Image 1 (cartoon, rainbow, N blue to C red):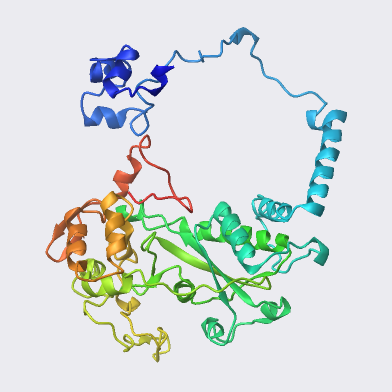
Image 2: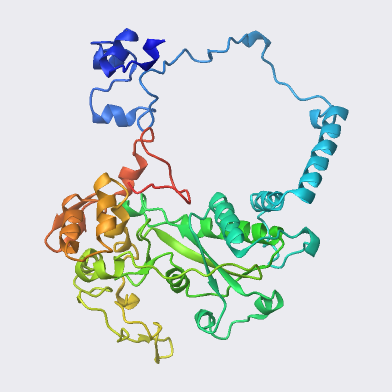
Length: 443
């Protein structure tokens, strides 16, 4: 048994497989080869290739032996296997098991709730008020409720969920003159703040994020079904200041872009969904991850904004934030109106001069802090001291994490070509995955 405790190095392992010394030569016997870039792009396998040890067989000859002379068009007979006495009896037994668990197990109702939220019946807007009787509701402490909602919503599409109370301050963030009748009817006292991720891979290549809001609406319906099937009301807060809720509940900090910035995902946040509920939940607090202080020094987003706007920038290059609101916008009748909320000392994004919507957030330094081991050290350093912020920001430029393709000049990043073409040709063998709520597709 001594061999089970012997350390085997890589060469010995390869030798045991009979591949020692073969190296790339062995791989080349089975791996596809291309003479030049044009030939590779023209190949149907240009952006996806199996690993070199996977062989390609003849057409219509899978590893499971097949007699094609016996393969004919076919239709299932009149007996549905799911209608057999055995299956129906099994269904009755399964129902009994669920009912028994419902009477003794605390976690059955959350599972049924997340199952309801996962359903594909999203064609109509779900009711925001629960239909469950009191005896069927899930019961638990606020802390247990927070755990269930975070776990369930992660499965349904939201990587982070935070909580607030409905009180005199949070009510000020509801849209003025909007109806709060459903919130009052639902006896809502807590707020659920659910993060929706934004794709950054396509955006960096000039394609913005066409999927984001559609993705958001689907998750919104799922989350309402989930909470109401727990036995509690889940009312969408009418047109809230979603970034403000995200920041106050600890999901992000305010940034120079005048938008929420996450210590985990940077600016890759599409929106925070905000719900009111009668479920008793704990109250989260704002965070300090050093992001707002970092924005004093970095200015990468504002530099890029200047380049996009031919010298006119929607973002401020000032080191210090301000209480002063940006220029008033003209209305169709010739009057002017304010389009920014007063009361926060910050850098305002003046949308009157915004040229591209996405050239700022896609190059945020905090988007990049998931790519290397050193980034964990950077993330830990930034909240403690701002001494190295200028150095960290300059390294972001040197390593060219931002828009692709681009060139760097002393003024900042400048796009040089339509990167969407590159996106269509990306290598899907090594590409991690596309937009997924909890993914790290920051490539």
